Length: 450
Ligand code: SF4
Image (cartoon, rainbow, N blue to C red; front, side, top):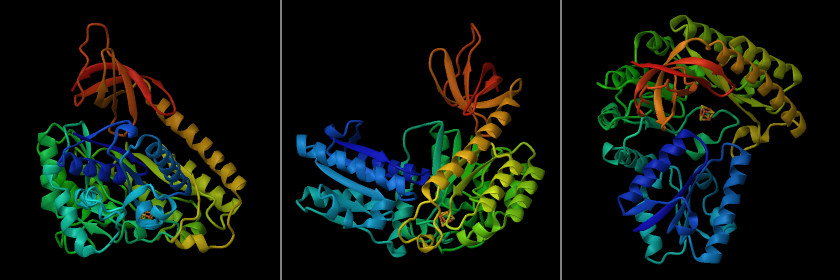
């Protein structure tokens, strides 16, 4: 038996890629392990979206290098993901203990690349972003034969890459151009997962609204709203979600799905990034604050109970106090249920790295703290409004006395059972009466199974 230790940084795309790598290795007789000192292979799946994420990668690689020097394990150290794509063989120059570097469209070759290391090669790098290679490999690696063991919720990749070139973002450079998976492959994977007991599917892509628009793999006339309806028709599927959407590509056909597709959860992650039109233009986002607010209003027209989440970047080059005030105003207008907010940092290759008028770190930190304080107050208030209500909850985990799950609006609920009541198993849909609301989760008591 051989062991692999996988550490994943970054987004859900990376989580999904790590699952695929784990499955490819399992097919070669590898078992996952928690302790890197027990591993034959330590695999670091990296994120370069922010400077801090990249620093964490190098810090971990340093720890693995020291471990290898002291106890001979992990035998091989490999780096995958966006930092691998961006830095390439420079990672091995800087950190000679690393012997394998795989780009974002080459990790499907992991067994073959590993065999080269085991055969005596000292350094192996696979970094090609060529679509000629990617399309067949991408399809093959996503086949249901590679599906994992049953779970309540799974991600299904529908596309990879991005064509948008937001000026702060490295994704188009590290993950390449958009490629959509064929409908038949996606449906086959969803059906297999549901047959294994999966209740909730999240369709995954950098910009799901572009599905089918830009490459020959996808069915020519098929667009994302069609895909949502086709996946939603899978017998036995209880919940459907998707992420991430670009506001400029969000159209009424997709918004209507929230009114007309019963299994589509009323939760939408719609990254806005800034409330200032001047900043949005420099970010190359392709929409204005006004058009974003119009889309929010239309979404709420079709699905009044929809919960909205977003992303913010504060301290983008040239962001004035007035720009930032507009961001706060947009947050207070929409009242997002949750947001993910970050300080801007220069990323190599991204256009904004060369923009003038960089914002001082302390100003960025102060704006981030103000924005997060406003968001936290809104989140707590929106959660408190749910106390006294009975909500549907899909159970994700349970022990002998309490369980945890999520509402359709993606709020985490911790619940207890009344004396004499049987605790539901993960995967059950139940109703929970909400009794307490915190900033990050709700607490309540199980009422009944649905
Ligand atoms: S839409 Fe913009 S932020 Fe999102 S992955 Fe593409 S370039 Fe990056």
